[in-house]
Length: 322
Image (cartoon, rainbow, N blue to C red; front, side, top):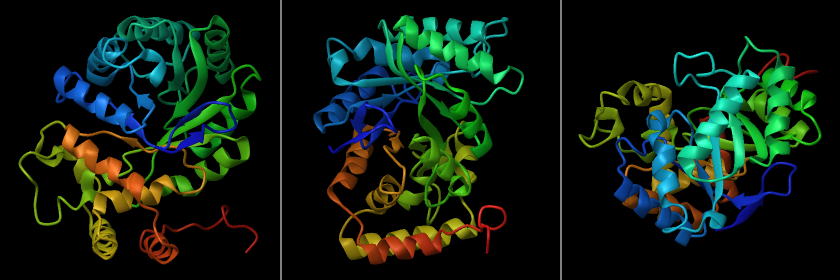
């Protein structure tokens, strides 16, 4: 798998990341092990998790697989903090105490002395940004964290944090929802990231599964759309606009002799500023399907057609002067 620099840093990662949101829940340890081996065998290196996935179980499962099954040094280990874990004073948020407590908990569950990429899962308006950034700097100086990033930040939040970050702990990545069905970040987040040398890590690059085409004629019984936990998550992208985009993706896939999944993933993977889409899979077979995207590059005509059908309204002040 091709490797890319993560933002304006020296860290190189695979241009696809393995997501673990369902690990320890819908995805048991045996299936997680199979996915991790398949991903690493394909040349993948970036594995993404978070302290709240499965209430910490995703980190525990991942930690149990590193060392014996896959060497720790073969993966770029990424996790996140900020989301509320407990009701205690340090159970969530971006204060110094909450962040450093969360980091120690993640390291314990992952069974490692450091993470390669530590990300702020969300903006916390109740904490001075200087305090949050100072905690990131401390984490890097302590050796417990190698690089830092953010997730789900708006354009102004990303620019504010990037401008205030210390030279010892600059932001190298931002993880945001980005796909043919969700292009809102094109307005301000993508330009802000480019200006500050920050790499994009798209989550839900397959439009929460809708871009695979599986929902075109209904809701498969074994899909996330049929799950009481994820039904609303998927329904968000089941719109008339989405249906038109999915049809365009399917048409492109037929012409290229590949799957809609591969087309949708290749489109976002090669957008300006994107380093590695984060792909979560129900099982290893589904992950293998995502890995086929590595084999294709969209022809300019198809990329242009998909750009057009998925385009969003962009006006003042993003386009100024006219």
